[in-house]
Length: 112
Image (cartoon, rainbow, N blue to C red; front, side):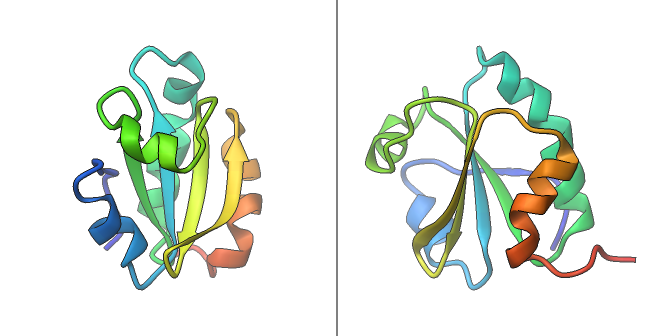
């Protein structure tokens, strides 16, 4: 189901992200992060356009354990998880087209 971005926490990260049967892009972000707010509309749009990848957000201030486990040092960091593993890491704010290019191996055509 494409649609609004879901928030994940340290508590449900494994269930929602690592056990997902499709690729999951996790946006590691914080409320005080300007570039994080900058890319949010692009991620929302991609979530609405794509069924092949799930997009979730993890607030690093509220969920430091998961961010630390995956070595997230700067935000925004976008990790793509597939089969419980990180298969792609995107660091920094990028335009929607660049994010889509990075996701290309994991997604098919946009839905009509």
